[in-house]
Length: 467
View 1 (cartoon, rainbow, N blue to C red):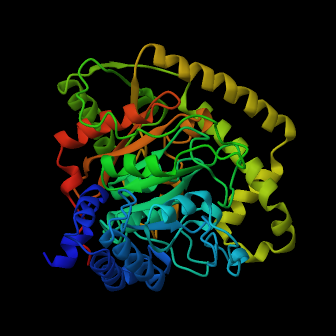
View 2: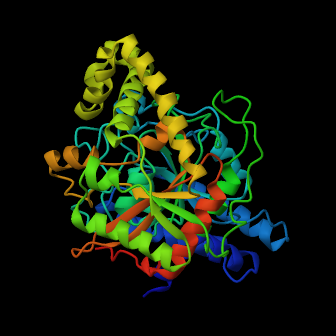
């Protein structure tokens, strides 16, 4: 393995120790990751716009500050990327669409402000699905991202570039967004950690909306500790985001390393065995993870809630209605400038009746109340994220079929924190994964459980061999 490859697999936490101790130069680190991206990304399309000049300027600034002893924290001198629906002042925010290809951001999104203030090194804008919906499209100005474990396969979405870049070692951490599972899907498909925190915990200001009442900003990293560090940085109240929660945030690494003996783990099996039948390898990996949690001392039992289909129908009705409200003007004036997949997805909202939307919001409240009541019986819930491993990216029918076979959208409906965690690999070498779900604002507990599982298993030490 080359020195560049060694640096590619540094975690945020490990890099921070080296950088702070002046054993690693931020410039050297950044140059290595830029070189890796330039060497490999032509095959994976993770970057929509790489920004090596900005990255090197950030790295030089961080190096000078660290040399002077002006340490800002664990992201000081650490590279990161942004899904290209997140604003970075002076750069285009395109949402991977011809509609916005000339849209220059006037200001940073709140999450961007926080990463820049922490001394992070901005590596570039990352691919998404058009307006964070649709799927991998070949009729857009930029090609879709591909899976680093097998580039002929889908990497998940819509935070596709964020998942690919992180798993491929182009950067150790990335920002994505999640309206029906769009952080957790690429995390599952690419074998990394993806957190959709409690609704309102992370500001969405400066992020192109898809569905206001379902949108979340989330974090993608290769390890649990790194994910908790990143959420520590970006969480917090924003009075100018109407969905933001005025609540103390932080401390998400505080429970890492504590054992999980006595914690009550509820396995929501009917989502992936009865409501939808998951792929056999995927189901076995989730059941195996639950068994491992039991061997680590947790008390594991099955729990049940409303059928998965009810949650999915509520999410679909609300998402399509709200997305159409965002896009109505452009769809009337410039329908030809959308890709076929996003246009079809968003146009569906034009045919949702007001009564259907209202009834969906009413059912949402009932489902949410009933789901949260489960946490009187258990502390954390385990269930599926995707029902299937990644399919081929050029198989439109398979992409469409597998994309809807998921159990992520329920937790956009309920607003619950949900964490995607790797659970192994298929016989053909594609990642498998599960979700850990908690009651609102229980992110630290989810990280505790995920960390205990991660430390007991080898998955975090396995990386794709890019070709």
